[in-house]
Length: 67
Image 1 (spheres, one colour):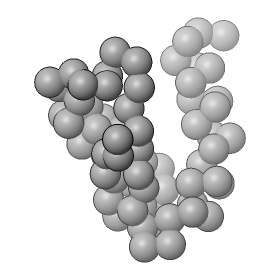
Image 2: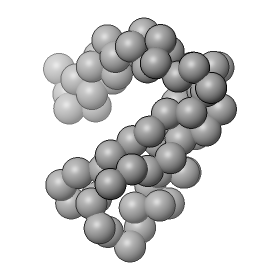
Image 3: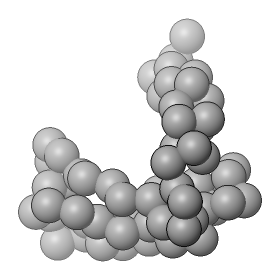
Image 4: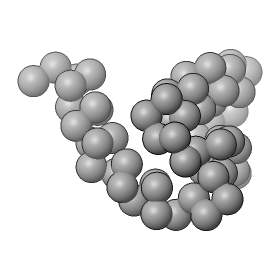
């Protein structure tokens, strides 16, 4: 199984958990590792993570970074 397939499998598992904890539709994300503090982190969050979550989970209305 490729790395991408592994990541997708894990996201499928947590999707239900995300849905049940987004009462107002906002998901809070804490970036770690190389992404934490990276100048491109906001673009990664909005263009990658937020877009994907909104496409996959209609209840998600916004994604915000937390420290």
